[in-house]
Image (cartoon, rainbow, N blue to C red; front, side, top):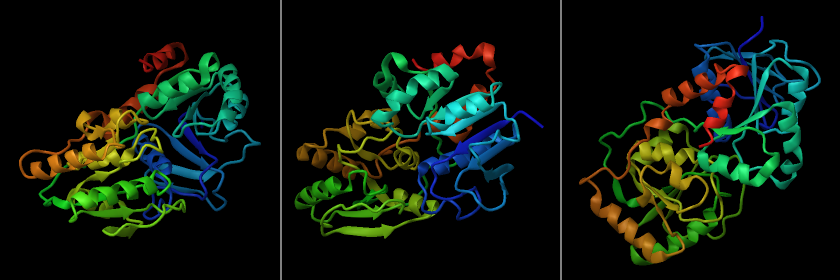
Length: 346
């Protein structure tokens, strides 16, 4: 049997699937892959191959999760191969499967060494899909004339992620990312804000996939550790906002921002950093976070607005059904129609 789509992940530290608990301690890339794969599975045959999978194959949500051997062609002979982040593996798979369409699904900002690999992608006809327009624009500028075809499809949030009647706590803020994403700077700016509003607390949820020093922990910080998604969402429903006043780490998308906005929780973000302005549901969430007056003013505004108006809303274009439809449309584009991918660059 041939056809369908195979996702190839050679970088995950361990095997995973959509089974309960299998994504614990992994990042947003793996979780997003599972959601897209299992959402596409009712439409076509989907396989996810992982270098870290040494045990038997696993079936979850109609998707087969299997091992990967870079030396051998994929036995399912897929029509489309989507490689997660690896620019070295994609051209090899293109050579092993000359009739297949090969796409790199780029979730991160690549390093300088990737510039040297870009011509090989282009020569092999490998396309790149980024996770935001800002990410795609950055990558085109980074690669210059050697860039392969580059488009973008946003990461998804659940269709049913909506506000409920949970009361919002005007004194509670939330940081829900890995500590390497600017937590040390967030701590210092929380400390400064707390001098103005002493009742503020900052809950910190750490997904746990990367240990990172963040410096002294200020008074008023509530360590939550790693939370399963339902518990994390419950904190988003209670918190005044996501508190991310840092300018050191740029997100290629920012799934936690989109999810928080969907349940009515705004995010305090650095304007012009990564995909912040693209993902935030309104421009008021993006400010100059180096300005303590601006931080204090925005927090005061949101505190006074609780119960009077929604503080944030979900973006329809990020909903899983919409994003899955975009992937399906992309995968249904045959060789003759591939210039449609370039149209996504605008």
